[in-house]
Image 1 (cartoon, helix red, strand yellow):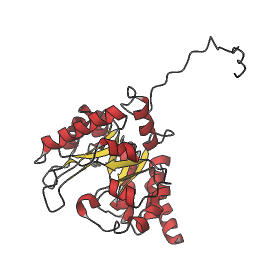
Image 2 (tube, rainbow, N blue to C red):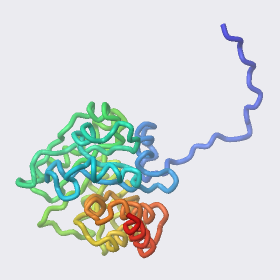
Image 3 (cartoon, helix red, strand yellow):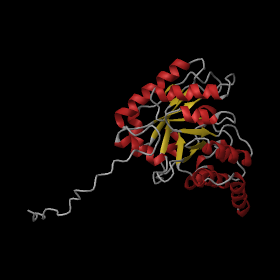
Image 4 (cartoon, rainbow, N blue to C red):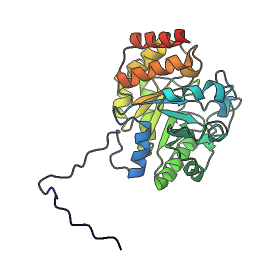
Length: 291
């Protein structure tokens, strides 16, 4: 039997134990496992994240920049905080030695040839556990043809995630006929948060975006959307962060750039260091020219 240790002497009776609020918006009352997974996605130093979205192939196929994930995307992993992708790509291409947090695309169904809002939950929560993901992602089509189904899909994923401590990111999908204005995004993001999403991916808008972030009780990360020029992408990220966003989840504006590594590092500097777009653009150009 091991020798019994002596009883401690320093009990710090006059020092109250700290009970700090969790730093991620709307997450104070979550369980430890849920908070820990969110803390992998959102850097504890500043509460922000740079996510790289490469899940487009689940409905678009091998779109430009995603023809070869192993060649085009894996070299970018060191420059981002988190990867958003499908389980097929995760298992077949991403080395298990990659320790960046994974947000897994959990919804699917129709291709780009069909009505995209006709999605279903496309994977089981047990597979999310097997893969060790930090969060799940699901499209929610507020105003779409299958709006109710997509909302219920999200709530089912939220319920499953709550059972096992896995957060849910709701992605507010916007159809071609939907108005992209502050009123719409206040509605869409608030609905997702009210019904349980732990954080939300939505689009940046130039007028009223701060009203979207201020009225949503959980963090918002912005989608990059269609490819725009690098300076505009940096300005969008800078404005979004300074108007209340907790990060970006960019895809095409990174992997379709003429210097994906350069723009990824420039975006990171904007999000985490609050670097001005003009400075970040110079960083992007320096990295591009050095290659």
